[in-house]
Amino acid sequence: MAEGLLHHVEIYVSDLEKSCSFWEWFLKELGYESFQKWDQGQSFKLGETYLVFVQAEEKYLDVPYHRCRPGLNHLAFHASSRERVDELTEMLREKGINILYEDQHPFASGPDYYAVYFEDPDRMKVEVVAP
Image (tube, rainbow, N blue to C red; front, side, top):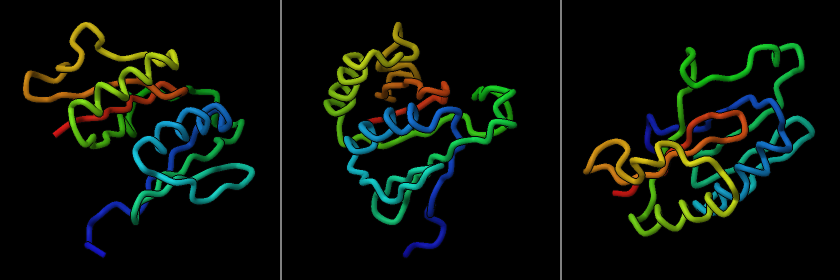
């Protein structure tokens, strides 16, 4: 095990069922497998790293998530190629998922950065970038 690699990321969500439905298909596309599942959460694992989604308690749902507030801004994933970014982009569109920066896609971060940006059900930004 390489010291310093991420072990896991845990994200509290406003609607566990909706979030897991969104994340499950996407993460499986990237090679993740369902890892653990319980009443208030679900995790997905790839290699030694896993992502955990947990239902936030009702008392904490009064302020909705916003990626520009302190805390997590976005998750970025590697894609194997630009073609894979294009394939995932089409899948996102078919599912009706909002593509961010559509007018600049796939070069929203500049001419040397080929990526798709989109949002999860809580509007957390997700990025898939090609080498």
